[in-house]
Length: 162
Image (cartoon, rainbow, N blue to C red):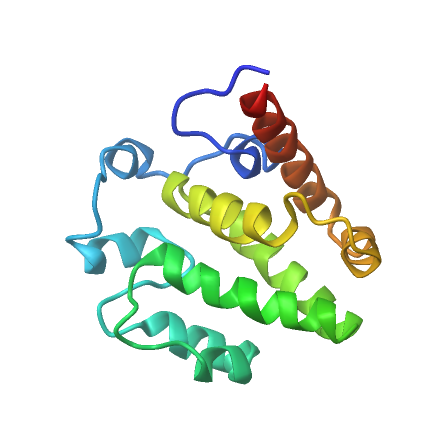
């Protein structure tokens, strides 16, 4: 499988769409100007961790666990990963389904940076190489596109191992 540079399985599974600001988003190499990035990004990320405010409305326990010093996108997505992992381990399928629906909705309009963060820091960190029964059950609860994105990424990582 050939992967286009800077594209993840989430980008491929969600229709290869980018927002109106795709050219400027593609040129963002760092998060030094997080306020501008936040306006282009449906998953708010700022130095003040507005992501916490966004998550508080939907998942207060997840938001409460975010350290406001950890403003980097991958770290914030990682926090969601930990909460999702906890839901899997507790077999809390309704919370798990809500997490998946949330991630699915965010990916609908996500830019390349966010696709990468969710693909790597959420999907791969959560599922890659995991064979436990509860994780297999969790996969069956994923929205179709999210499951397709995970499958694309897993195939890509398997090819890299060869």
